[in-house]
Amino acid sequence: ELPGIGPFSAELVVIRGASAPDVFPMAEGRLHEEMAERYGLADPDLAALARIAERWRPFRTWVAVLLRSARERRTDESAQRGRQDSRN
Image (cartoon, rainbow, N blue to C red; front, side):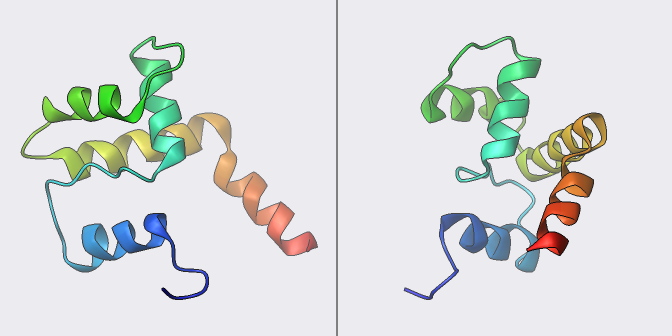
């Protein structure tokens, strides 16, 4: 176990570092929130989201990146996070 490296960071290494084109990020909370909103799900569990993502094969990584990117553009999350980080 490495300090500061959790499930989310480990997935990013596999997805981006290994260029894995067909991985559903299980630890990406913002992606899961975006999926719930787009699919009209009130409080989906991870298994339900993974079942939805099965339909994206063999491009689950790319769909996940696109949904996450769309969420950031729509909500301005990344810009807000950058402003918060710079204040700390």
